[in-house]
Amino acid sequence: MSFFSTPSGYKPADSMTISLATAMGVLVIYGSKVGPCADVSQTLPGEPSVNSSIRKAGWESLLLVGAMTLLSRDLNIAILGGAAVILEHTMYLHADMASPGNGQIEVSPEAYQPAGVAAGANLSVVAG
Image (cartoon, rainbow, N blue to C red; front, side, top):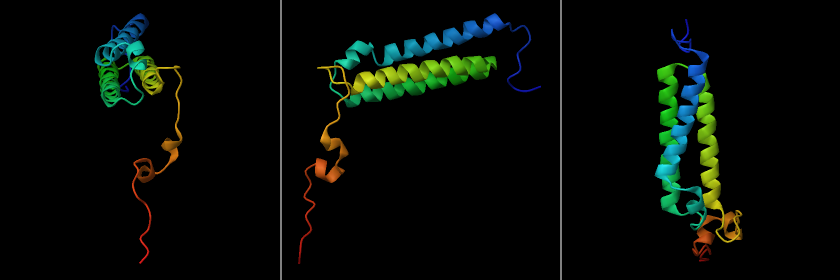
């Protein structure tokens, strides 16, 4: 008997109920840790506090999905809960990266330069 075998008294309908409850838990975690996605999209792209909140919500959601999967011993929870984490994280990261003016991700040429050049460091070699 494997670890992910169905516990006694566990019906297929229970699997879907727990999976949907876990996915809703992921939505609640992102909504409470980060806030509405519309508010995130109105901040400056790459705001450190928003990015930190998104990361915290992602880890907390993964812990929730993992705990519910291990407690129920049902892989359907891992599949649906993991999909909810991926979708929410992607949605919030896109909102964080998008420009508030036009709602699109804009990449500046400075993003492709080495860090020293972008920071204005003097990279000239002293001849001597």
